[in-house]
Length: 70
Image (cartoon, rainbow, N blue to C red; front, side, top):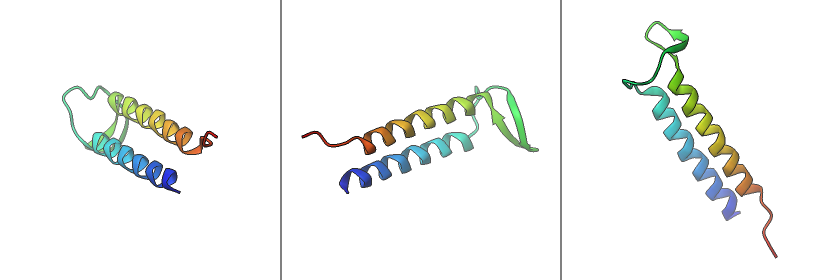
C-alpha cells in the first residue's frame, strides 16, 4: 500500500511540474507547432516537456508495479 501511495505522490508532483512548465512563457520555447488560442499554442519546447513527463510516468509505473523481492 505504501508503494502505491508514494507512486501516486511522485506522479502528482511530476504532473504539477509539467503543467507549470507548459503554462509558462519562456524566451526559448521555440516555434509554435499548433495554435490553440490567439495567445497560446503548443511550442517545440512543450513537446520536450510532454516527452519528459511521459518517461517519468513510465518510470513511476514500473517502480509501482515491480514485485517485491523475496
